[in-house]
Length: 107
Image (cartoon, rainbow, N blue to C red):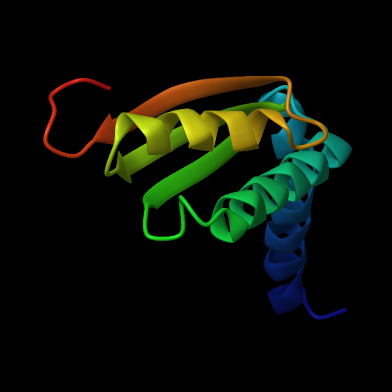
């Protein structure tokens, strides 16, 4: 192997090791990360298929089954419906409501 390729191999090796260990550094395994991604997808689908929530701007993030909803809804009823729909998704352990209702200063 030519000497010019040795630094490349070390750099690639360091990158691969860093990526492999990064979930562990944040206390989340690869399986947890995949589960969280699946939960996020299911929650987004539930919100999109709910006729009361289609026009809302709700962002969904999941960490170890804890779902965080943020963004804007038009009414308190939509806020409640978003929380209810999220709680019904398999794998959701808790819901943190950071939603803002348009026209109010309340969250």
